Length: 406
Image 1: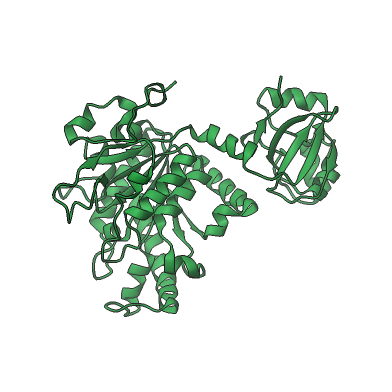
Image 2: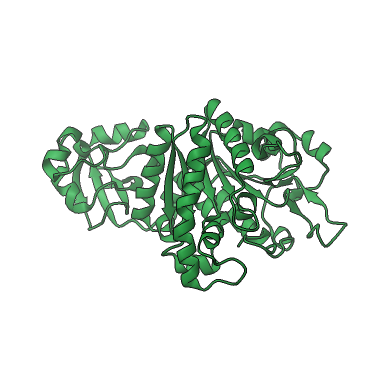
């Protein structure tokens, strides 16, 4: 059992200086949490990446690329969630210096996204890292089937060694341009990919008891265990400039990430020193705020599947399949003997034994219509039966939780 759960504190947060943070137990420091993470999601704000007149800060991006290469070299998987498309595009369309209409924001996003992706490609190619661009809307992260499609794409890219660079699809996500932010998008990406660390690089080095720009007595909080009403009251408004977020959206992101079992760090994205790298600075002890989850990413996802979904149908499995599920295996077509209800790919289903007892719950990789055709067959026969090659499993073990009582 990790120490943060073995020795809970009475207060939901800890106050302290840079020195006090460095002296904290390893699992309760931003530096150690970042260094030990298996899968990282890093969010980059517009004000870090884009200069006031709309130029990309190439030197800063090169420093970030060095950080990414260093993390990748020690085996960490990386996803970047980057703002900046609108800020870059407005300059090239001559839209600088005034408030943009919605249509102008969409046009700026369409223009800037190309340049943004190219800048990341150039910077990371110098380290022999392949970049992939993914544009998301909130529906892609919240609607089950689209969520699964995006999750599978992320998983494949990461397994192939690529670094996905994610942004909102601002050219069509009209509501998100007006009210959205990439802090919460980054948290949703962390949730979707079962990341164990989310880093929000910002223009501030963490959460304070009040806005430090207005209150000289504001105290920095190196550790937050619970996002209480007291913590939420500390959030201020967004700073002026291109950034659409503020501490309010960062705390909203923390809620999403920690509920998914993911640690989150708010840190200064432009640390002191012209050659400083933001992630290396965190590991070097730079001031930051670490938010702790209540569970690990895997168990949090299992809990979501087991209790938070309305099952749309039932799959009855034979004894051989049941034994495999108990051993942590996936549910294959050969083990399914009956289907009840009508459901689509990505819907939640109940898995029952031949006696009718519930054995588990999971997310189906096929619709009920397709399962009726492939039930009882080998996975190698799926393509011939359906006319397309889907997953080998009807429910992958990552999307399955055993619920039977033994």
